[in-house]
Image: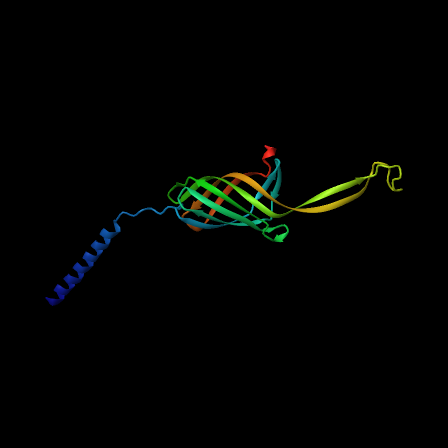
Length: 195
């Protein structure tokens, strides 16, 4: 009789714990969102450039940035190229304000976004070519009057601001926790007189 009583207690205990477990797992669970507020992320990218309607192809720049979204819809971003065709060097930094609208699906999400910002370059260089033209009949024997005689290349270092607006789309997948894919189009201008 004691064995039957103990066995009944064990079965009742297991059934009660299974029932309690079943009740607790039926609680309302809030689905996880892929785009959150108070979100801090590190961004590493490269780019494809088009200048004046002509493709310049992929560049070998590597950019790093930090994005912070204090709300789900508004954020800030700071970027800097750390590697260019000149090697590892940081000569400019950009900052912008972002507005996004996340659209969540079952296992993935997209977020179209807009941004405006500015870039400051403190170490840009530009080659300036100066041609000296002969204007006198006493041109050197190698050249006719009016032919270029000498070319002088001068490298000028400059600091300047560039302003930009951008539109993009970011995709995130629930199965890939720490990676997102984004496509972005950016229009930049350094002189508003060119508009």
